[in-house]
Every structure is written in structure tokens, then in C-alpha cells.
Image 1 (cartoon, rainbow, N blue to C red):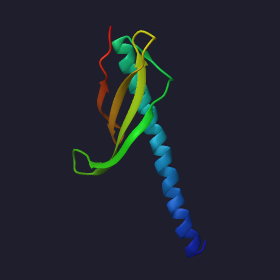
Image 2 (spheres, rainbow, N blue to C red; image 1 turned 90 degrees about the vertical axis):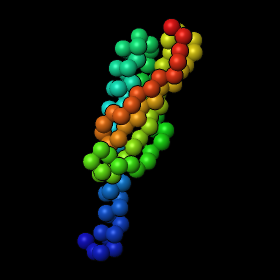
Image 3 (cartoon, helix red, strand yellow; image 1 turned 135 degrees about the vertical axis):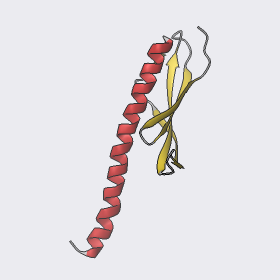
Image 4 (tube, rainbow, N blue to C red; image 1 turned 90 degrees about the horizontal axis):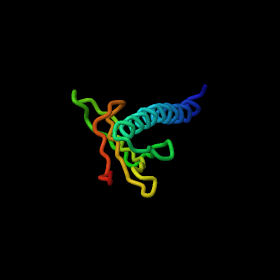
Length: 103
């Protein structure tokens, strides 16, 4: 492989790895949302989460990691949708928040 070929291949390979890891993180967030909804006795909607924000932050040991905020929707009555937010640093769940909803 030539130098030009390597200069094209390496960035593409890095993007593929980032995408692949991102899909794994998204699945972790989805499972956390499902679990939170089950515990709150509400319905997790659309069986998915969506990436809302992506940042670079330092972890507890000072190592840089991707900080992601995912959003999901849920309902308590079947009539109105409410939002939930999943904060992740790397592959660790940092915080899960759910908007107030009527019981």
C-alpha cells in the first residue's frame, strides 16, 4: 500500500471504529432506558434512543472520553409522550433523568 493509500485508509478506519463503538454505547443506553421505564412502570416508546449531544470530557482518572446524551420517549398513560435523558461517559452510565409525568 502506498503512502497516499494509507493516508486515505487510516481516517476511514478510525471513523468505522468510532461508529462501531458508538452503536455499542447506544445499545447500552437503550437497555438503561428500558430498565428505567420498567422500574417506573411506564411504557418505553419506539424501542430506541437518539443521540442528542456528543462532547469530549475527562473521566474520573483524567482520561479523555466521549460524553454522550441520549434522549428517549415514554408514556405513563398512552396519551402523552414524555422525554428521558441518558448521560454516558465512555461506556459508563452517568445519569438517567425522566421528565415529570402524571401517575
